[in-house]
Length: 167
Image (cartoon, rainbow, N blue to C red):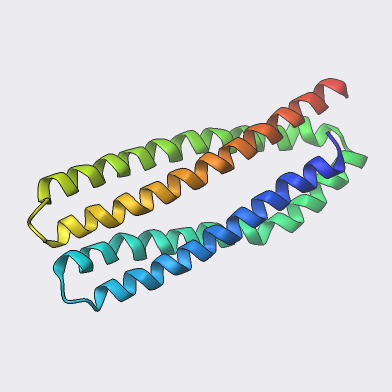
């Protein structure tokens, strides 16, 4: 592992969270726009778009805002305190990786719930059909985002493990 590996991981995280926040903002705007349409189905679509858009914005901002400090802390530790990787960074990344498993399971449950809502309300043109459609869209976005983030986290975790073994 090198300084560049560390920077690359955190820069990719920061870029991805910026995109995540933009998607969150766009889904909030779309969700609000759906509230102004006359159809109950469209109003239903708006609820999960706004709720999950706000979550995306908050989570994205949280990760984005702490990334620069993390980069400097980790690079400093790389040079001055290699034990940091064994005692702090590896356990942190192992928690991150475990959390991605939980997130994916929740997202799959949301996806299944959305399909059930759509199936039960297909042809009814009601709020629940819209909620199912909006939830379907958001579950796919969240799942895809976490798939990419999980791959980055696993790669970085493996680099940390290799670094620890060499030191």
